[in-house]
Length: 171
Figure 1: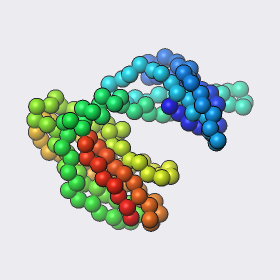
Figure 2 (figure 1 turned 180 degrees about the horizontal axis):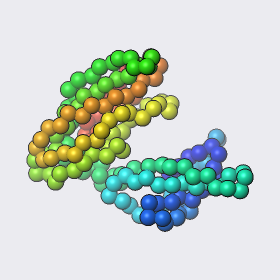
Figure 3 (figure 1 turned 90 degrees about the vertical axis):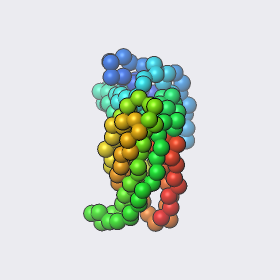
């Protein structure tokens, strides 16, 4: 599902070149919500989204189609995540939160590499994306993951989740 204020329609282009028209279109107050029904992938995937421009030339945006729910369930079942540290500091005049997480894959699970979309942040506004390097995980071995999250104004909050770990943060 895609919602944009400037695009009442558009074509989704998957990495293999297949093109998809919206299955449904729902006008909103300031945007139109488009829903596409595409084949399920095993991981998140980058796709192109073409919209017709006023000049007659199509514009193309890049978007990420999140991993299917089955991946999220797999991570909830097989990851043990513990917060091992948190630090608020300033970088280039902006406040940042650095979270350190200890992530362990179940000893009976197959090796897996985390994806950027496996970290879910929910917050008000369009905050900048977190900085982190999703690691490859081996069964039974703990890995420390460092996540740098740009903070918005004081009094804000957000929720962060990966696997079954979930935290609500306020500052």
